[in-house]
Image (cartoon, rainbow, N blue to C red; front, side, top):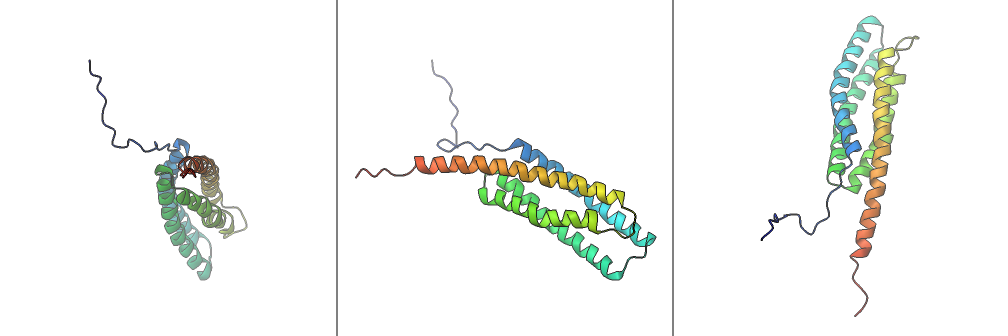
Length: 165
């Protein structure tokens, strides 16, 4: 009796172990970012009509929104690519962009963008959710990086040629 064994086209390669929590965090962050940008633009337009905002600060807000959009697209792509294909440099890039660019932009939009003396509750709420996503992704990407570097190191030492000539 012959047992059916399907041909595996990935035979001889190591199986990819994708981090499901990191993938879920990135997935929900994509949808949050799609909702965050129109909400932030709407709040800014409303604030311009409600309060006297200097022209320089308005220009700074628009430039920061444009910068946030491009950095966010790059960050989410690098995170997805690094997690799906287990690329260590991409995951390191995700952590660095989270800690430097997105962290400072999140701080600017949440706490430095005040136009009056009373706190802007929607700004704080949007920034807190974004900060939770950023912190969670830094933590999860750090765990995934640790696992990947360990596995790659073991594979490197197992594949070294022997010195028996």
